[in-house]
Length: 182
Image (cartoon, rainbow, N blue to C red; front, side, top):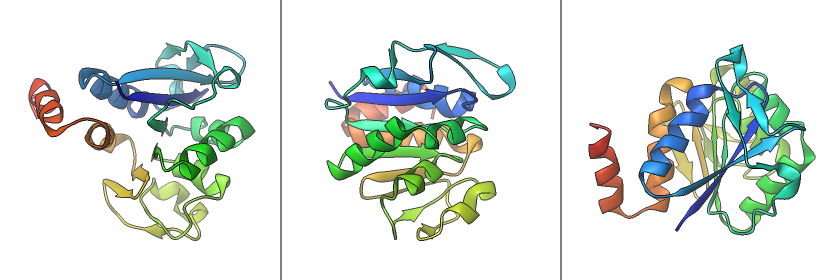
């Protein structure tokens, strides 16, 4: 079974976290919610939802993960990129050729980790100026080798489906999409 780690920091964007979680679980992927911060309960931006995590980032080695998911949201993506353990995990996934998936402002975490320079990316327009050294493409979702990025909240389902496409076979992906009426 494939395994996805999703890093949740205070101020994450609800749909950017829940859409990939839902889609991946439908596709049979194990999804592990990891708290970045002192609490296992992480509250979204605008206080819309609180997600309970099983692990804190300092309790995970990430050795068995197939993908590391970084949702955006303000200040969620800032809290992610300001955490050295997050940056270490991003580098670990990148250096072992495992998938890193970031949406909205979270591609700045990739930039802060100093990886994937010259790769094709997309991101929220509000953080584009922070993505110096990357090839910005105005796309919903783009994958360049082991870095997958998405523009923002409105593209959360496409983001989740593209992650699933990287992890499961075509039949499973097709059944997942049919179950979602896509």
